[in-house]
Length: 211
Ligand SMILES: [Mg+2]
Image (cartoon, rainbow, N blue to C red; front, side):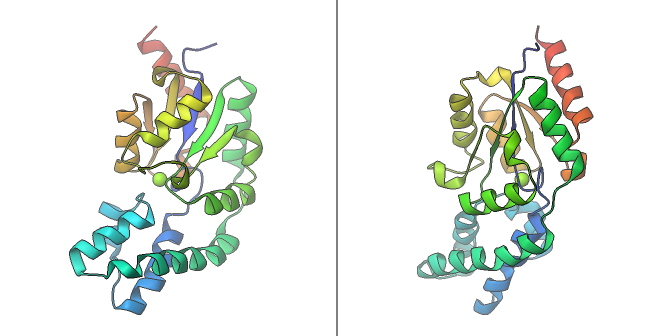
């Protein structure tokens, strides 16, 4: 058995190609208040942040009234649901990757800045829940990524040390959170890069470096 004993996956942009859905759903409600996040700003700054953090940034920058945050957040979740049901399906490469890692004895979990209900819906529709011991959402922590809290919490629950964990992440906020938690970080650019061979090669590399 290798030194690495667990793999913690981010969800959006890693196991689920949901970044576009979050982008579209938030803009669907923001345009009703005369605002929209540009695709450039989404990719460079907003992607991977919890909705509440995105709204705080929009208020600081454009004066979006803070009293609207609750309503906008609720409507954003409302608009996300049909997009999930339209676009979220099982991906064989991800099922194979998680099944094989699990069979090889690795402990698997998900730590996401999304809300619990979205994670549950997406991972259920993608048929990935059977391979995971648990998932953590932004409702399970005080501070979302880039704070390391969610990864530290996942490692604590797995009873593994940071050096025993690989985190798979797709954006700077998540990478910062995972590094601050002390994990080995495999960065991918989108879900198509999340394959068994790539994750296993990274684990082998980590094992070789610090034996
Ligand atoms: Mg992500």
